[in-house]
Length: 252
Image (tube, rainbow, N blue to C red; front, side, top):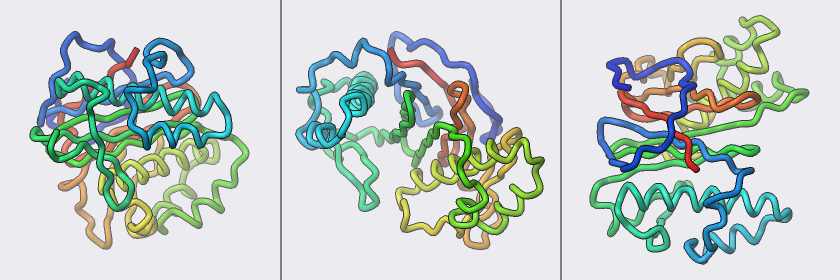
C-alpha cells in the first residue's frame, strides 16, 4: 500500500507471500516468522554458515536453538528469493555495532535488512538503499517500568509516560522501547548512541515519531517509524529513512 505519509499507526494486516519477491527502493517489506512452527525450519542446518551454527549451539535450551535456526533459515530463504542467490551461498558481514549486512560482493543492488525476535515471533525487514531497523518485544507484566524508564529513556519520554493514564503505561513503555530500539538498529550504532540523547513518541495509540535527536527537533525529515501489530502480547516497530511504502507478509 503506497502512501505519501511516512509515519503511520500500527499495521495489522499480514499478507501471504507473493509468488515472486522483488526488491524495491520505493518499498520496505516486513516479514513475520512464527518461531514455534515447523515447516521450513526442517531445512538442513548445512545452509547456515559455520558462525551461525556455532551461535546456535551456544543456546542452553534446545527450543531456543531451534528458534534461532528457524529465524536464520527464514532470513536466508527470503534473501535468496529477493536476490536470486542460493540460500546456502549468502554471505554476511557485520558492522562495528554487530549489525549484519550482505557481503559487498553479493550486494550490487544495495539490499538492506534487519532482524529481531522475541518469544515465538521474529520480524525481518527488507528494503534497498535505505537504512532499516526493526524491533519486537514480548510484553511482560510486573516489570518495574518507572525504574527502567529512568535508566534508559530521555527526560522528554519520561514526562510523556507520566502524562498518560496508568492503564496505558505498560503498553506505552514497550511502545517507546521498540521505537527507540528500531531507530538504534537502523543507525547501526547500537549502544554507542546514548539512549537519552534522542526521543520518540510514547503514546501507544498514536503515530510513532522520532521527535528529537541531540537537540535537533526536526528528525522526522530524516527518519520514519511505523508500529506493527504482530499479535497479542507483543509490541513492534520498524524504522527507516523513508517508509513511504510498507508491506507486511507472513513467512511459511
